[in-house]
Image 1 (spheres, rainbow, N blue to C red):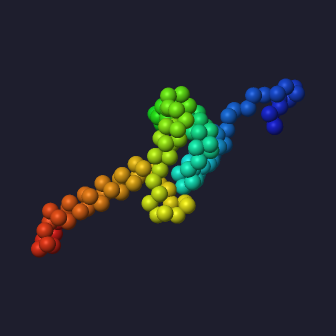
Image 2 (cartoon, rainbow, N blue to C red; image 1 turned 180 degrees about the vertical axis):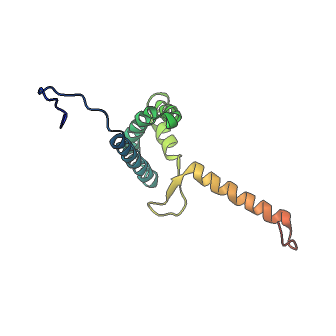
Length: 136
């Protein structure tokens, strides 16, 4: 059997190539991650909603990340069904913070909150040590 054909001319079903499937999966998730990252830097609601729909389908097919598909579904229901157009627009753009003032300086709000919490913990740690303590 060479090339998927038997000796009698019938087409034989080929076994799935696991390496090829894994490579395609990694490429798809990589492109999705890159698209989501670009969308974070330059938020655009018209570009983001179809990207969220695609990510929801891709997250649902993978067992390890399927929990994120429900979060994306929740966001899409808010954007398309529950909220008015003005409130949906406000909710979408509240997901991002521009910390640098430049066009591509947007970061997700939850990441900004993590930065703030880290700075507060660092400040509290240095205050607890006092000015004369060398080890803390």
